[in-house]
Length: 442
Figure 1 (tube, helix red, strand yellow):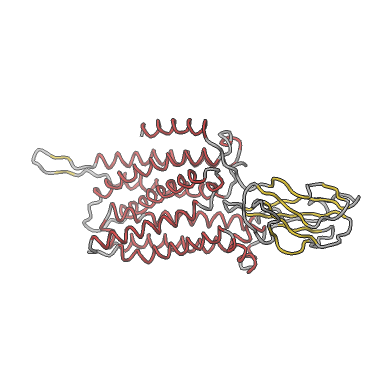
Figure 2: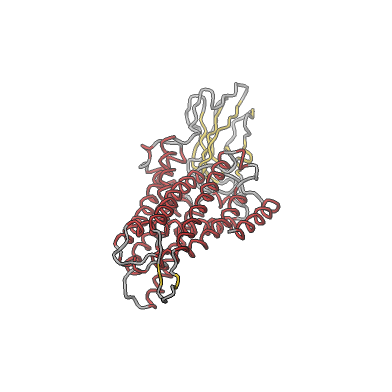
């Protein structure tokens, strides 16, 4: 543990000095006309230049007059060779007056960015969104709450399915344990259900609509057009493949050749599931995306292996199978958990310092406060995990004078420690879900 902490301190110092911070979300770099511009004649189009290429998103730019009537004509398009610039044409022969431009883009990390700006044709007054025209620039509170809950459940599903590593590496007897298999199936079901839930919620989430709009065909089509929607479908397909592999992989008495093949397929499809999370979050906003996405894959994968293993271990400790010696199982998992914890700590340090705009973000923003809470939860988890390891070490069989071995496992203490770890893991996952919907810069 001391070596891990020393390495973390070194890595943090190196990243603080040399890292290029990521942009939080897509931003408006410029617009034509500009905000507050006064024009002698009506323009033929309104264009917006963004900080990143988000593609052509239908309905992302709307222009209305003082009465709230739409004066834009035709779809959003790219007017030139600059991929970050998008525009919408206006109706010909617009009369003098004030016009409000409403924009709503979904950034690469799947979060909506909305706002307004206004311009005037002629000498009339400038009316902004605080005036006669009402612009929907906020995410609906109910949609936001449900989306965050669904994200948390999706993480929980990945963690439960991550217990497959525990079954394969630490407790082969779980292959025929219906309770252990039930946890794995629950995890796969949660990942699949939340992928569908996230898909139908993304439209209202991005458009600032309510829960009643989840079945809106136009919003569903908009989600399908963007990369986020396609990645959600990939997640659904990958977890379906994993669920189909599960009974084959856990079939007892399989030849080694077939078992190795199924394990390799499970690793590939599991990697795809994890990638759909990492490729739709804050890491993709990093200028050096490979570093952050790789760190996020390692971070989330190690969490799934550790917390999923903890859940499986807690389950068999509280309801042990008849005549099963759980000490070798706990000892094997202790070694697996140690490697996972090291990976979580190192990748988490890289992520925090690559994604956050600055170190000061830790104490000046809500995102930073959530990061600190997550770190505190992780530190508490490490403390409880250390207690579990001590219990396991004390329980290892020691040769006696007669050559026999005695086992002094304190199951009560081990159950309490592992159960506490599981509960703390649930809290840390909730904090992770909140982090995904919170801009790093604010």
